[in-house]
Image 1 (tube, rainbow, N blue to C red):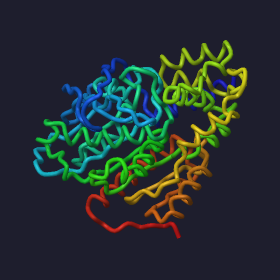
Image 2: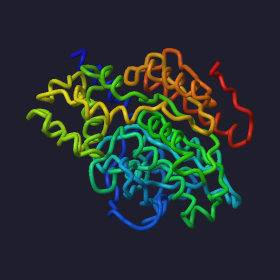
Image 3: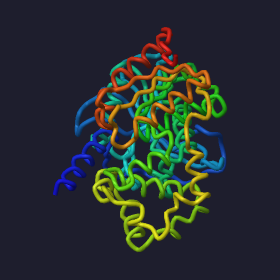
Image 4: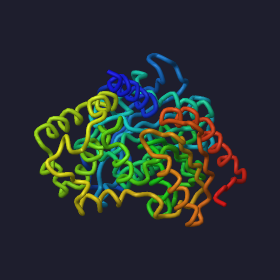
Length: 389
């Protein structure tokens, strides 16, 4: 009974910190023409942190061009949100990466914004209330055809950068001050921390025209194999199976189906159609061996793909605010510290913040306002406080 209560509590925490969304994301087909960031479709939508809560914003559901982890073109969905404050000149734009929402299309952030059921919308509202525009990617495979490439760092980072490009190319947003001259910030926590950190590392090579002033990123799963080891048999065990689905979606040659037993196949089918709170409860305290005939994480091809999503191998070309809870039960604190060490060793401008006694949920709730304040200082051109030394 104690384990079940713990699992339910942890699942609620994951939901609050990472965002549980509602149903109904629109889908979009693939396109072979255009450039990354080009708008494929756009339609008015609405942004509500809670059901019916007004925000004095305009919002658009978009699909836009991006790039898969293998470098091929794809189409990703997302949302662009702009304050209705009458500002005409270039305004700051934050491309915001949400944390884990699930694998089903109904879990996409864009599906929950009109209903007020995307919990991370409360954090996003903190940004729009400052007069900033926000672009929120749904990531590859959420709200568009195919499985969500959950935990595939390159695909996530490219989707985050292309969401900013798409916002700058959206006519309605341009009329409200979102232009190519807008200073850009990158922000995210947990899965969003992985995505935003990858965007920071890829900016110079993938989207150098974006005027990125800084990245605020927290609870970062910078080493997926270490995160998997920490969660195997623990409260976040369901996230391992979700990550396996995501990696297999990007790299079908991994053949996840060959490793699953009957129970594993049933769980994968279940998780593909549900959101994070349900998946977390269903998978809590399970072990990889419960779902598999052979552990894929011991195989060379799986390890190669998982290590390809590791962070800390490239220097972000703009300043970074990196934060992590010291007792994070899902993403080990040591993983965050290592990312800091790796970036600092490469000469990056990093401001590191530990959150004492911070679990995963505490990390996002306590860290969000200082992270936004740090971005505000970057937009204002204030000096950074690198504490690598």
